[in-house]
Amino acid sequence: MTPWAVLLSITLLLVLLISGKIKPAIAFVSLAAGYLLVGFIDTSTLLVQYTNPALATLLLLLLVSLALERSPLLDWLSKHLLKGHPKLATARLMGSTAVLSAFLNNTAVVAAFLGAITRQQGIAPSRLLIPLSYASILGGITTLVGTSTNLVVNSFHLNASGSELGMFQFSLVGIPVALITLAVLLWRANALPHHRPEDTEEKLSYFLAADVEAESPMIGQSIEQNGLRSLDGLYLLEIERQGRLISPVAPDEQLQADDTLVFTGEVSKVQALQRFPGLNLFGHQADNLLATNLVEVVISHESELAGKTLQDVDFRSMFSAGVVGIRRGDKRLEGQLGKIPLRVGDCLLLAVSADFRQHRNLDRNFHLLSGSFTRPQLNRKESLITLGGFATVISLAAANWLPLFHGLLILLGALLLLKVISMAELRRRFPFELWLIIGSALAIAQALENSGAAALLADGMQAVFSGYGIYAAFIGCYLLTLLLTETVTNNAAAALAFPIAWSTAHAFGADPLPFVMAVAYGASACFLIPFGYQTHLMVYSPGRYKITDFLKIGLPVSLTYSAAVLLITPLVFPF
Image (cartoon, rainbow, N blue to C red; front, side):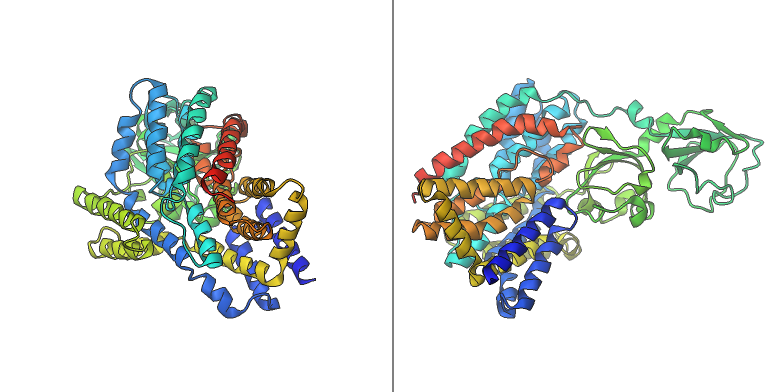
């Protein structure tokens, strides 16, 4: 009965993850805690999973990446790649992204190119952003540190076998697969839509302006006294007064003659302003001034805004900015913006105050698309130390002269001592949820093994594929992982598929390594829909894409990628 109870709980976990009604970290931790309570795992077994050496290496890599992503190298590349013929520019962008993503966090690489792509005028961003996201995935599969998925698989492999995977062990299959798939991606990029980013005139259509006339009885009274804080579908964003903007507007701010009040929200509900005496709608144009403080951002996967409304978090106080508009994919969201639950990947148009850039939580919550605000970068010396140190660590690990964990720990210590990165930034950006997910997933895998559920699954796989041979079982494990990664997150897919693949390999008496690689490459095979991978969500709204755009490009890419993986992996890693 115990194995079936574990399998039933895993099924429930999958349903919850697919529904999106509960965060993956909460779901995984809750299930691991449940296994502890019913005795499927003991306390020491549970705790040791959160200190898995490969998991610790992943966390160190992500923390070091906080300094790497601030290197001016990425910005320099972004300015020089998009010149010349569009086809050549696309090829250069994809190739550079793939190479960089083999060693750097792919989210950081995509974030660095995202702003430059949306700001340039030569090529429609929608022709470049999906290739950018896909190329970052394809580069990531080529090395151990290229994607968190490979490091997650390495965590499970270390737990199961006692040995870690090599730095370039993934390259033997990853490089040819990446090259073949990149060629197909470049060919299919012609089918992407031509969507230009919103120009200033389109952005200003989010606003509604009204002048306070000289004889208005509203003069001398505060915003709250005038009843301007509780309008139907509109809210007062800022005030233009004598050539300067007051933003955000405090409730006790008193109106003066000739003020221009700038509203946003449901601008079609202009009738809500007609009841105010001495307020002249459309009487003054403040376009040039309004355009100076507009910033466009994308909500990041680390953001605390996801799943919450603007009212829930008191956005204006939190960031000293007002949300003028929200775009999700190709749709501009209408209605009362303050009551719309936000999602990762939503594109926000902000009207910001002078204090906006002082907020330390910007880099955690947003990827910048446009505007005058830029993140602080490393200077030349800091950049050389960071990039040189990281290259040295990777080289020493590849040559087996220094374990990757040791090298990254030394590098992180050096970056802290030299003040390239601060403890405050490490605390702010620590990947706490990822640590919980992977640690809990390792515990769940141990429960699968201890309860006999993994053996039951392996017997089922053997029964299904016994008449077709071990290669069919290998394909089955890959397709299972691919299906999981398209419906839940890539790391969760790897965590759930690994125990099944490992047990299946042993059931057939085969070397587990090709099955392990099938899980690693399958967990990165997220090309069909934008919701399963964080870089897809980053480009979804800036590119004004529809889901069908991802399907149109992703289907041939996914088929090519899968065929290459299934053909090359058994040749490099025999059963």
